Image 1 (cartoon, rainbow, N blue to C red):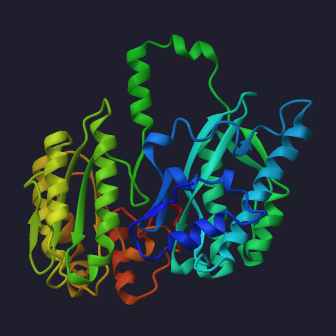
Image 2: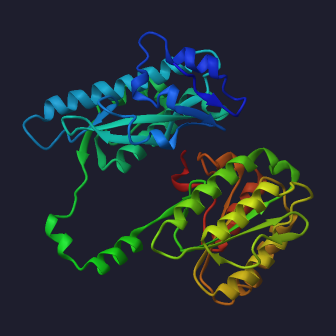
Image 3: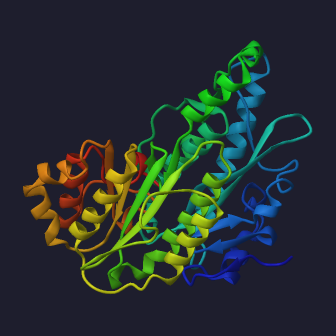
Length: 389
């Protein structure tokens, strides 16, 4: 069987494949190694395999409360989920795999009995070496996948992360799911144009886990040399976002501003996302030289000028990892910063690399405290959605 590939030294592929092939490891509940690869810190399924990989294997997600057969459905859900957790625990006990947990990436299909089947992806990070942190993040990701699959957790409602992975196993053995409510068929009689507008209005997006509630986005990125290790994920996430926005009915606008002691605008203004824009931004990020100091104020000044010209609601996401004396100065003159947007609706969100994959958004350093205060003053928040990976 061909082995999974890897372009990142954090995971040894041979060790990973060996761990996946151990007795009692339910490999069919995860992305298959012959159709997947470690991309950075994430174990991802090849896009070409998404429509065919599930078949009749994978975790069964089904309503355990709706009919006379609910007891059998509940037993199946609990059996499958407990085997996912038990396999994850076994994997983490294997050489080189102690930092691995399930990710929010999954593939879904239906088996011959029309029952939903799920296979999970994986993610690795040093912070997950802690058993409690791994359990907390895994639980959050399980719940997210359940929700995205059209279900909600009926029981247990709460999970105590201090019980660690063994507690997560106990949680899975009691798991009960309920199908989310869906509108009746006659709602389809609503005029198609109005329905499309309603659907587009409900759309939400994320960039590195940070919600983007507007159709316009400015990414303000620290290009100091200390950010170099994190640029691969920034580039990958940007390319994925651009690809999604290219294929929607709604016009989206974007730009990237890189800053150190000075600021450079990739496009010169927020521009509508199309193939040309995507190519320009991807080339800008691919060739961006990480050097110099860290002065967010320079990036904010350029962003404010472009946002005023754009004159539409904008989400601005600041990505930085360094100490930045200009933030304290801007906080002291925060009204001037607000006035620089000249009344345009702007939400500024800030994030450091330790939160790119989620995590506890409680500031850990004085620099992060400053970033949080800055975002809060401008209607935003610090860290990624929900504070968990």
